[in-house]
Every structure is written in structure tokens, then in C-alpha cells.
Amino acid sequence: MNCYITGATIKALREKQRLTQSQLAERLYISDKTVSKWETGKGFPDISLLEPLANALKISLPELLSGQQIINANRSANIMETKLYVCPICGNVLRATGSAMVSCCGITLPALEAEQEDDDHRLICERSEDEYYVTLTHAMTKEHSISFIAYCTQERFEFVKLYPEGNAKARFFSRGHGRLYWYCNHHGLFMKKI
Ligand SMILES: [Fe+2]
Image 1 (cartoon, rainbow, N blue to C red):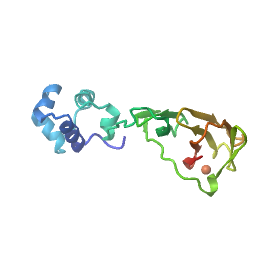
Image 2 (cartoon, rainbow, N blue to C red):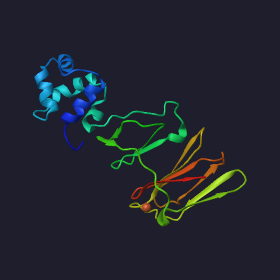
Image 3 (cartoon, rainbow, N blue to C red):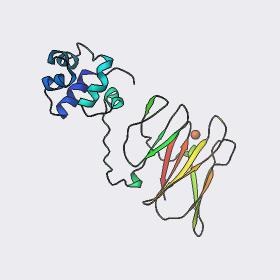
Image 4 (cartoon, rainbow, N blue to C red):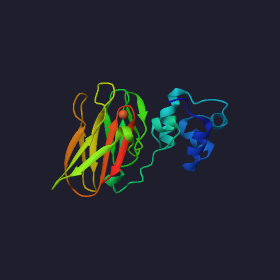
């Protein structure tokens, strides 16, 4: 969280819920003048009001504070729409089948955006009869390494954890076309269709 909740956020969320300033004020046991002050930047909600305010605006507290509402558009839980989140503090890897509000170690994590491979993060995928053999020639030191490789198809998401000083390689039973993901702790997430 970089800043406290803004008036523009409160106004936009209130209007989305089709609430007047008075209706919102009533739910929080405050005056409509107070709501007006918040929305015009002449005052901030007291910290004790943040949770009731989030409830009234039908949004989670982290979303309210970030000013960004997360809406999952992937209602059918299509695995190909998987979002990955990595905590920069503890290395926790989280996966969701759509957009979600994810936090770890006290920070809200953005969904990782996968990049196309580059010369330093080139993945080689060899297919034998019934498996994919995936390798990378990338540093695998404690400071800089590939921390996982994953294979995603319509039915399954397979995740292989890698360790520093180990090899950056994985084997997957071939289940046809899908996506390969790999994550470098310094350079982020990469993706390639296979
Ligand atoms: Fe890297």
C-alpha cells in the first residue's frame, strides 16, 4: 500500500453500489457531510471506519486501500487462464485460475505477467515418445536461479520446483498442446506455447 484511500476511490465505489452519500453515511453512522469531505479530499476516513466502509462498498479491505477492485472474469475456472503470484519476501508461489486478491508477508501481490523468452532465459523443449524434456542454460546459484518450471494444459497444471545448485530441467508426461512457464527470481516469469 503506497497511500491511504483516496476520495476518488470512495466516490467511484459508492456510485458503483448505487448509494447516495447519505445512504453510505447512514450505514457507517456518520453524517453525509463527512462522506462529502472524504470524496473531495478534505478529510480521510478514520482507520476504525475502514472495515465498515469496505463492507458497505462490497469490497475487501486490501482492494479498498489499493483502489483497485479485483474481478475474476474466469468463472469457468479455465486452467489456461491461470495466474501466478510470487512473494518477493519469502518466495511463496501462489496460483489462481483467475484474477484474485492475493497477499503474503503483508503485501498484496500482483499477478505475474509472463514474458517471451530471451537469450538469457531460453528454454529448450525436446519431445520424446510420451514426454517433454525441458532444459534451460541459466544460472542456478543461490542469488540467481530458475525456481520453477510448470506445464499447463486444459486439464492440468503441473509444477516442478527447482533448487539452487541443481539443474534447470524438468520432465513432463506429454498431454498435448499447452503452455510452459518458468520463473527466474531476478527476471520474472516466462511463457512459451508448446
Ligand atoms: Fe535470470
